[in-house]
Image (cartoon, rainbow, N blue to C red; front, top):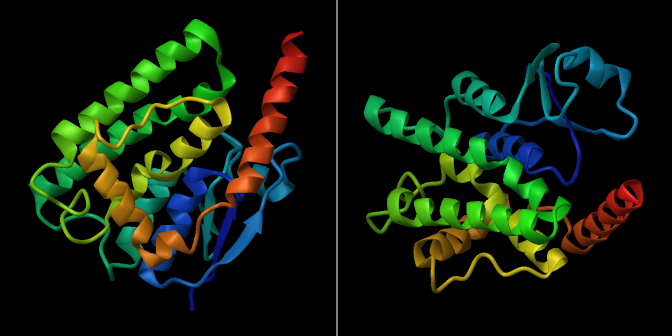
Length: 222
């Protein structure tokens, strides 16, 4: 039987991408929590280039970067496929996954910025939500690929859960359901999937950590 280990941190959306994929596939794994302020020798050994999480260890072989890991999982364990079989549908899915990855930096920028810089980040968020609403979630689909959750849904997890947390923390209102009804329905559908609903970071713990991080950033800038 394959030995699967996942190195991650409890708050990272990139780590949850991998957790959900493994659980959707029914793959047992050992989870190893990393302290990124004091990275373990194993993490540095398995990801010597970026020194980041998540890292998936499959029979001693490390795979890094969440999207790369998702595609690896989907190829190794073909049950409950996360990408469409049709070449065109697969290409469309990969486009939106890349789009989500290219926008992922907006999450940390939202709570690390203030004033005009933060306003510019909010504008980028609104542009991303508009693209999702008008181009990705069309045709009355429950999920990006139709009636079943797939890799595109997983890739956009920061919109479904982490954005709302940071909005509450920063006192912002970016996502308004009446302006993005398709995205709003998708979030409800996504978070109603048992594997997603039962595996999300604790909200109060997240807000406490965000407050601590902002205080540290402010103290460094003074």
